[in-house]
Length: 393
Image (cartoon, rainbow, N blue to C red; front, side):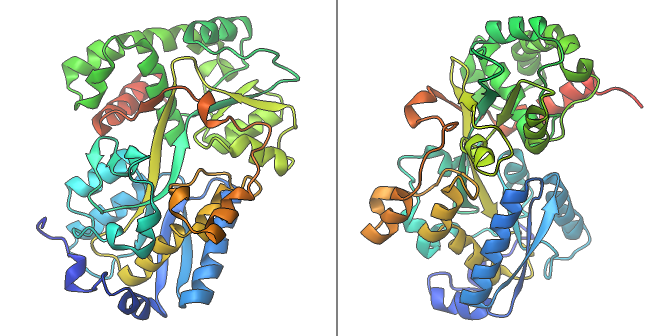
């Protein structure tokens, strides 16, 4: 066990799930999760109503603009010796934030997630990103919540044929100045865009599976910065400012300011059509060499005040009921982490009833899934990008 952490076994017997439910009753769970999308916030509100009714747990959504803020809060509490009664109970997390918390001993040490009753439905064999988060072994320290695949979308009534290669994208940006942008890292979609571009220009993709060094980073990213330097002057607002997140990208497309937006949720464009936020002529595409794919999770800090309540919420998020609602493009449209074949007929029917919208790509249209690099690459990409493209005030 990492020094300074608290194992679940010392406080809760997760194998005795009823005892966890009993301990959770009456607890307040402070769920730190990105709050930038109204439909996601509404889904979390629904989860709160369900766990309140079923288990007597009060769910408080602490809306974040950056997951690192929650991580830093736990870091600060540990430095202050607050090893119990922490302010963060549950975090929506993946990637470098998970790697950082695991490395610093900020997570429950026991593999609590694999002991959740609904974990039996997780598609561990079919979705390897559920057990390795940006190359870091999960080891039951975070519970699967959803799948992600970088997807570009556009209004087919305006843009007849989208650019599907890096060369075509560069040419299109040059021919259509001001009509393309991306989110500023460290926002997750901005960092993901950098990694997507890096995969397209790097000579040896296997380098990305190893921790980055100054030498390997400089060598691998030189063509990336060359590419971004070439397109930068022709971006929206001449590259002087960037979008904040996926919500702003969607709004810029809806307002006719840009012609191509991007999301990490393959169902987001169809969901926005259903919500009348985008026209029904919007369609999706991916680049010809594949698209970035990963999983996202929830985790519990070592000093969480309401561990039992957090586990009950995490288990509910894995339930077929909650996963099917999340996959509904009228609600969120986030792909499920479950193995549908492992469900009973009643549970399968929840997913069979879901319809794929006009802007949602079929599974075989995504091509190769580009696996997340080692988390060190994201940190260095964000830092170098800021040096190059963030204007000094």
